[in-house]
Length: 349
Ligand code: DGL
Image (cartoon, rainbow, N blue to C red):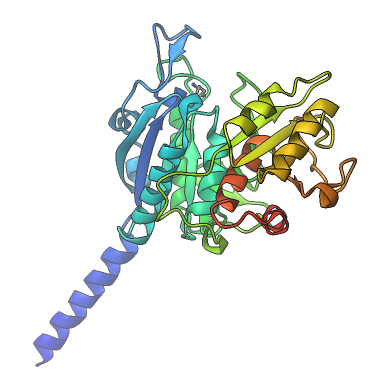
C-alpha cells in the first residue's frame, strides 16, 4: 500500500512538472507578403512578395524553438495588396478553430504590410478568444541585407508566449512595437518603423519579453458580437476618395453596382465635394449606408460636424480610417441596416 501511494505521488509530481515546463503551443499561419518575399540579390530593392513558404520562414529563426512548440501552415501566399474577403473569412474561422478547438495558446500570422491593418481589425472583430493573436510582416524581403522579418517573427512568438499578452485583442508586432488592431496604420511606404498607432502603441517587446503600457478601450474578440462562422461572403462596401473638384463618377459606379455600403475618405472632417454629396444622398435614400471617414491620417471623423449626419442618416466613422471603416461597415451590415445601430457599432468597436 505504501509503495502504491509513493508511486502515485511520483506520478502526480511528474505530471505537474511536465505541465509546468511544457512550452506554449503556437501556430503560425502564413499568408505571404514581403516577409516571404524574394529579391534577385540581397542588395536589390526590387522583389516579389509571397514566394517563400512557412517552413522556410520558421527554419530561418531556430531560436523560436527555445520559446515555444512552433508549427506552421500556409493559408495563401500572396502580396497583401491582393488580400480579400474570402481569405479573411477562412483566416478568422481557422484562428477560432486553432484557439478554441485545437488547444493552441496563441496564433501568429505572417502577412504583407500593405493591408495588415485591415486584416488585424477584421480579426479583432471576429476572433472569439482572449488568447493572443499577433500579425507580423516585414518591410525588407527575406533575402535582403538586414531583413527585418526574422526579428519580427521572433518577437511576435515571444509576445505570444508571454502570459501578460492575454486579453489585449489582436495586435501587430513590428519593429519591436506592439500595436493594437484598431490603432494600427502603415505610416510610411518604405521605413521599417512604418507602423504606428493612431493613439500610440500598447506595448513593446524587448529581450524576448512583452511589456504593455496601455489597454484598448473598445470592444474586441471575446466582447465582439460579430460572428463569421456561418458566413461564406461579406457585404460589398466600396471606398470613394475625396479631393478638390472631385468627380461623382466613382460614387455613382458603386450605386449602379448596387453595393451595400459606401465609405467616403473625405477631406478634412470627412467632408464631401458638392457633386459627390448629391450622389451620396441619393445612394442613402436608395438604401445604401454611407459612412463618412477622412483621408486625414489621424484624428476622429466627428458626428454632425460640417455634415448633418442625423438629418441625412449618414454614419460618422469616428476613430476609424476609411479602410477600417469599410471592415466594420461590412460586418455591421451582416446584422442590421439601421443607421443608428450602425453608428452605435462605430462608437463601440
Ligand atoms: N506587396 C506588399 C504586401 O504584401 C509588400 C509590403 C510588405 O509586405 O511589406 O503587403
